[in-house]
Figure 1 (cartoon, rainbow, N blue to C red):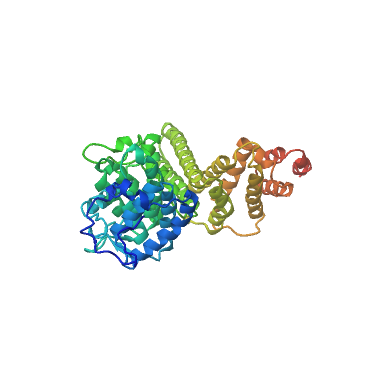
Figure 2 (tube, helix red, strand yellow; figure 1 turned 90 degrees about the vertical axis):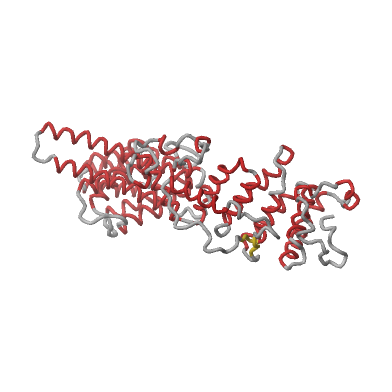
Length: 511
């Protein structure tokens, strides 16, 4: 039924690429005359045989015993006969691309369709979309005049999908093949995605801008540096910046600069308008394969914002030294603005972290990222101003509390068991550090500001968290706070611990 051009001996007929020049999209046109060749078998039996058939024909194509056109025609006939088989075909091709054992297919326009007509244009527009959001990639193009190639299973998949008609009768086919094609191309070596995009842009010209935008997302699947650049652009856009990195974005900051106005506004006549970095990130984060580095990068960005803002505030204060008391009052407003910006940065960081990985990344933040940061002093500048270190510690505390609140909630919930485990772990780390069981690599002012800020916000905003902490850990924390001359905070911490902490509170008062 699928390969009626093959002789009984299994050799390819004389019908080659030139003689098989009829359109692939019309390969199933002569349904009536082929009805007698179609098997009268249960659909489940046919579906069960599809993986073996597809493997056999793909192997035959790889060894030259089946032409690419006949391969595509046969697959299209199978899909027309039993549309449900498309899901199995897509699943098989996706798995084979992941294996990476097939030789590349040359998209030369003779055996396989050629993207040469607009491949360079697609690549340059992808680079423009990324550059508009502050993401700069060294090169997206293929070096020299090397022909465009795709892994053989991906070449077969894209050749099959471009034969589908663009009408309502084929919506179910596009719904299955579209996401799989995008995911498979994005996971293949560059420039697989631009090649697939160029082929589809040739078929459907009105989808050109849409295809370019969605193709630009695949860069972040394989390039961590690009993800870091996009995160930096999100912070710069939300907080407001005149840096050339985001020169095409508004310098006023806020949610409007972060998210833009949706995708439709990007399809401007005469070319694509700049894409807001937050909007691009929200459409990209699901495609990032490795997200384990995200907590550390976001923490570094939050700390960097706090350091930059506190340095600006310190410089302003130094410039006002020796001036009238009336001028010194303006520093209070400046400090309020700085604190608001720090809170905005930590809120943005917590939102991005929780959106990207949910409670899993928050767990990594509490168990690995924060202890490592304090122990190693990552990003800490030696001999920093006191206000700089204090603001950094407060920013980390605010960021940590918000991440925990987003992941586990403030009140009793179904996640309370997981929350109790993580909070106990982190509070135990704080208590051990206060008892000087190990040395910290960060500055003491930063550490002190973090501990006091974290515990103060927990007492005020999340008292239910404290009831999950071990009593011995609470007692050690209270003793450490008393050493820091923070008896009110220590007493409030024990008070939120409930009746079980009454004896420890009484000992603290009497001492």
